[in-house]
Image (tube, rainbow, N blue to C red; front, side, top):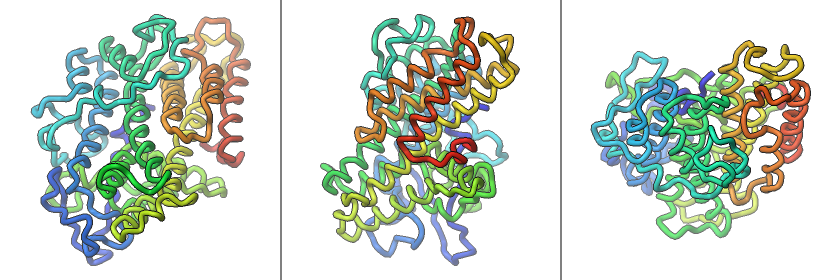
Length: 423
């Protein structure tokens, strides 16, 4: 199943009637949001309104553009359309409609958000581990290390969902942005705070930026439901009654959605691992500490910055496990050499491979990652450079290699056995 940014656009705002509060909508200019540094504007249990920061709407645009790349690649659009979205869509470019909802987005074009972002200019240019092993059909320069920008540009120019080798360009493009831009920038900000509690620019704005990359709305915790397979209540909701969904204030994006879903699976095994609440509460309390002038609380060994990032990183690692599990499930009824003809769901297998590969790459973008580069290279070697079709690879051998991927990650993060199986 395609797991896009927009698959996780769930509204998670505070129930207005339940707490007797009026939450005003916020637009990209922050004209309705109030001053986030005003202590009276802080709603207990919710993240202070970040909409007055100029960069906050940019994080929303980044999430939406990334989702648009994955969705449009599935539908074989033109390369020029994809590249326009990637390098900064025109203000008149339509935002891809939210799936699974009859509600209309309040913002329908990128101009409504204040404009799009040139993803190519801000994405990390760090070389992707083992990218020099990709085959000619899957890279612009075979045998050379490539960064996310170079590979994504190549995938978008192909304007197709998968390569002839079964490499999922849609997943690697969308999740490539998630790892090499959204997670990379969020981790960089949180690491700066964790080092000494300070950043070069206004701390509240930088903290809001990291929170925007994480992708949770202001009251994430109030809408978590671990009895749901996605860990969330509902998908979209029109809180302010205007007939639409505000993409800035009434939406949750990819990383926050994943923390909820992975936490729900762990809750179901009886071995709770609440990534979502740990990350969100650390973001919320860290923001209040900044407002109160207590930035030292962010940089302590178990301070808010490290707590938020650790929960976020662990979720990225769990995602690798989750999609490895998906590949192994697809291989259960395959004997001997792995070929497309033997797979009951070729698309599902390729989707799982692409997601596992993309999230394994994402793990390298935290400079203080639990897994070092040598461990990550080993994981990439075991995943291989493409789905192993017609390469003489036995299904049991490849499944054993995938077990080693899970063992490497489980050992590093001390995940419970039952959770690894459930994920």
